[in-house]
Image (cartoon, rainbow, N blue to C red; front, side, top):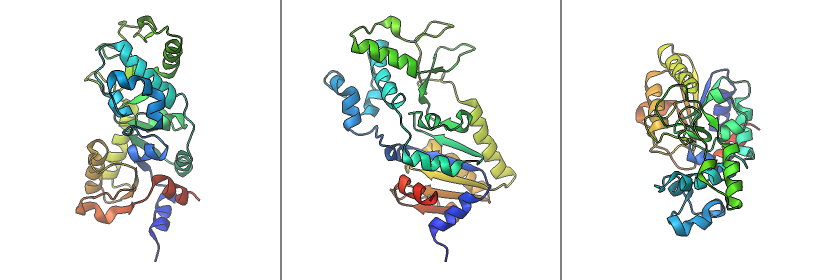
Length: 278
């Protein structure tokens, strides 16, 4: 009898499009954990803990800073470290090998911009909750554009290291002059990633209305993640030719109605991806 690993190898070797969903479990596999008071957190923000009393990168991201200079002091460090110092992991290399010459879309709640930095096509990466690799103006006007965050973050970090951090160094919108912020859904003026959202809609419509084959590969997505899981469950309930592969070290409960379409690995994402691509 064919085992699960051979089964998903056969599925992923087929020419069908692949929709990848990835969340915190994938980031943790790359050595990034925004929930813990770990070495990265201490290295980047340890000196600011007495001032703000945050205990993780996540709490630093969501902290209500008194002013934009304080906020940008934190954001610049995070962007400089996670975007500017990124080195592709073996886990990401395995995913790149798996998706080579495939029609794919990666939908991710991870904001570190690592799929883009690893070389995946920008239009094939849907950051469902925004990203740290770009900035935007949050004033409501036409012609707003995304701006690369790294050069600005590097200048701010360099100025801070020289005790020269001032308001005039903060990035400004060329149209209205407002300070730019990371491309995250802070309010209703968040710029949605239109091209990648359109590709998600195309995948969804093809699978549900035209009954075309599609493979969904879920990597480290938690049980309660509606932004990533609800559209997938909707697709699976409507589309007869969709295969659903879950790789997560924690057991994930799926509705009984889609159980027959699901293959689950309760293991580390990196280990399974490496086995698939051997």
